[in-house]
Length: 485
Image (cartoon, rainbow, N blue to C red; front, side, top):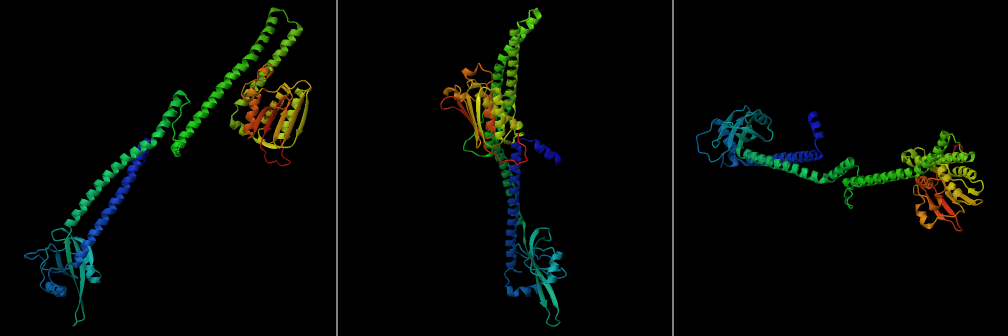
């Protein structure tokens, strides 16, 4: 049995479905066929029983004379058929409680007596119907009926009975033919069910075949542009699986494109500071190798340039690490954060970077669900942009009210045709390419805000400058003793 089960599990799904369908149909057909056969058998036996009830002991004798004929037969007992013409094929004989039988004149043979017949005579119960045999072993349908005689002189009771029978040859032949017909029909039904099951399995699994081919194609060629045709009106499991596969490959293709774009952009951005850094270091090295030291002012300028380039590289690498972190890594650190504390910390850093600027702040308490360090970095990036593009002695207005952070500078502003690109990775406006930065700051801001369920926008402010707006949904206020970043 285990070997069969193991072999069944190794079969293809089509073969298993076909086998299951064939087995289910075979079981149902067998149950129906057996039930039908027994019902027909019961009906035929009921008909034979009815015929036996109507059958007299001696054909042509009225019922009023039956008992007298029974006594006469027992008085002149014959246990073998008489050589008299008989125009019937029925059996009829008298029987006493000891099992002694006497044939009626028209009986075609003797019926073999069983213990059940004797028990019926002694108990005086209803007539007994059973299958039996005659003296030659032929199958017959037998009815044994008890007759009780009361002796008026002695008061005794004598039990007699009659046994009548009809041959079962015709009935059994009919049942045998019926069994053959049912067996043939069942076989045809099982074979047809297996073929139908195989056809249904092939039709039903055709979308799975397409899905399998698509998966194998992706695994073989790494081509994520493949799509499986799906009926938009269908909502079954196969259609849902196909849609899920298409969505997965589309997402993977988008992730690959973003990854390739990130690598290409990062390589481009890294090339400039690395080239500058290499040039400055080569100048310093050459001056040492040739024994001709650079003037002090030039040497200090080169060292300052090397330091600035290293700072820019460190900032670029940090931004790249931030963008490359997965959603799962971020989700593990998400908690309830005091948004106003993150804004205050960012304001302190902005005042250090722009001491010549006037920064006004109106910050009110607000709690959000976010990663503390990422949220603070996003606010710092927004304020850094405002500090970078503000003129010397300019003003930066910062406000936080009901989860809406607004940062307004009075710099040159952003052109209308550049606004759709400000959150793209490594994008920098033509006027900002000479300034330090990697072009990833606002991308990090957009990603952090979107992960917190909010939105961020940059617009041209009335009167000049740029207005950055961040909206984040609130979170339940933590208990008073809970520390927040």
